Length: 118
Image 1 (tube, rainbow, N blue to C red):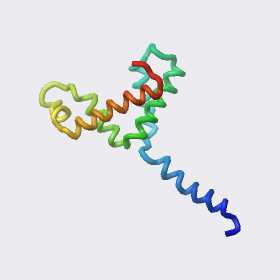
Image 2: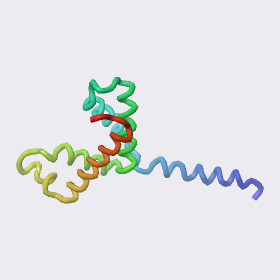
Image 3: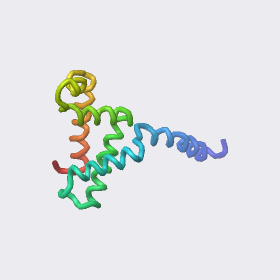
Image 4: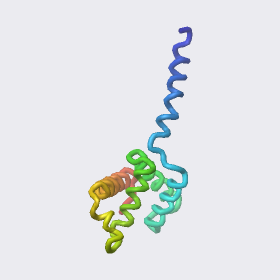
C-alpha cells in the first residue's frame, strides 16, 4: 500500500451515498412540508426565518421516519378526527395510534430544536 490515505478517502466516498440516502424524503415532500409549516406558522416569522426553521423541522423528521412512514403517520395525524366509521381505522388501530404518537412527539422535539414557538 503506497497510498493508505487514498484508500481511506475512496472508502469514505463509497459510504457517503448510503448515509445520505437513509431516510431521505423526496424534494416534493420536503417542499410541501415547508409550505404547510409556513402556512401553519404564518405571521409568527418572516419568510426567510420561516423557511429555514421549517426546513430544519423536516430535516429532523427525516432523521426519524422513512418517506413511507412519514406519509402514513402524517395521513393518520390529519385524518384521526374524521367523524364516523371513516375515521375508525385511525382511532382504533394501535399501530396507527403508535405512529401518530411518535409523529406528534417528533414534531414537538423538532419544533423545540429548530426554535419554532407554538
